[in-house]
Length: 447
Ligand code: ATP
Image 1 (spheres, rainbow, N blue to C red):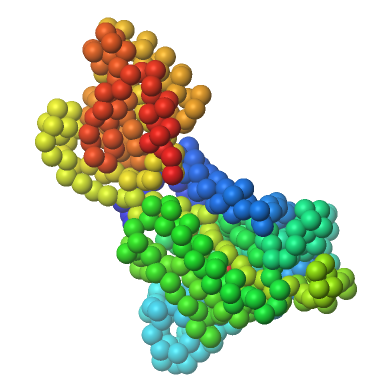
Image 2 (image 1 turned 45 degrees about the horizontal axis):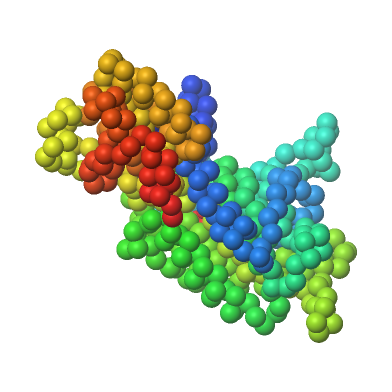
C-alpha cells in the first residue's frame, strides 16, 4: 500500500489535503491524473445508469438539507459508532478495534496506544454526522448537517422527479455527490475518508417485487464492476449478517475487493424497504405514495439501493492495476530505462491519459511533427507531450501514469509520416500512419 500511496503522489493522482500544514486527517486531494481517473469512473457509472437506461433519471441534490430529514432517516438517532476513550492518554477508539485487549470499561481492558490497564471507558455512542450552523447565529435551532449519504436527497425529491419525467414505477433515480462522515478510525489512504463521493441509485418498486429487483441489481452491479477490468478472483460477495445491517436495511450485500489490507466492501446493494419514504411521510406530514395508473392502487414504494463510493472504486481500480514487472529483451536493452518497471495496467478507457507523444530527439524536424500530432490528437483525447530525458525514462513515467499508448516520432517519421505506437502492456510497437492515429486510438480505446 505504501508503494501505491507514494506512486499516487509522485505521479499526481492523490495528495494529502493541506499537506504544507502537516495534512488534515483522512482528507485527500486529487491531482491532475487522479481527477481524470475518478471522473472517467464516474462518467462510466453515469452512462450505464442514466444514459443507457430508460428507467433511471439523474439528480443533483444539495449537500445541505432540512435538519428534519436526518431525524426522519434515522441518522440523528442511529448513525453512530460505539467508542471508547482512554482516560490516561486521551486517545479514542472504536469499541470493536481489534487491538483492544479485554473488555472496555472493565479493569482487564488494555489501551492499545499507551498500554495502561483499566483506563478504557465503557463504549459510548458517537454520531458520525458533521454538524454546522446555518445563518449567523450559532445556536441549537440553527444546526444543520453535512449529508452522510446522498440517498436522502433522492427520497425527498422522488415525486418531483417521477412527475416531471413521467416515469412509472418501477423506476430509479441516480446521483453522484459528496458525502461526509466523521469517521473514528479512518485510514488506508482513500479507502475510508471523512469527505468522499458516492454514486448512488435508488430504484422504486412495487411492494412485493423488491426481492426480484434486488437480485437483478446485484447482477447488474457486478457486471459493471467487472467491466472496469478488475480481476475476477479479487472480487466477491458478502451478505450482511443481522448484526451488520444498517438501521434502514432488510437485506444487504456488499461487493468486496481484496485490497492489500484485506477483503473490504466498496459497493453495497441494499433492500431499504419503505423505511425512508414512510418516515419522510410521517415527519414531513406530506403524502409520498404513488398512484399506479393501471390498477388505481396507491402504495409507498419499496426501494432497492445500489451505493458505491467513487473514491473507494478508484482505489480498487488503482490497486488492481498496480504491477511491478521485469522488462526483458529489446526495450530494456535499448531504452536505458532499467529492467524493473512499475506499471498501472488500467483499462485504456479509464486511463487518465490515453497516449503520450514523444519526439525521439529534439532536432531534425521531429519536434515540429510531434507537436502537430499532439495538437491533432488532443482535440479527441487527453494526451501528453514529453520530450524530457531518454525515451526509456519517458516510457517508464507513462507506465506509472497508466498511459496505454506511447507515440514516438523518429527519423523515419519525418521521411514517411509514420510513427511507432508502443503498447503499455505488451511493449509491442506498431508503425502507424500519422493521419490514421485518431482512428487507431479510437478503436483501441473502445469498451
Ligand atoms: P464502511 O463500513 O466500510 O465505512 P458503510 O457500510 O458504512 O462502509 P455504506 O453506508 O453502505 O458504507 O456506503 C456505501 C459506499 O460508500 C461504501 O461501499 C463505500 O464505497 C462508500 N463509503 C462509505 N463511507 C466511506 C468513507 N468514509 N470513505 C470513503 N468511502 C466511503
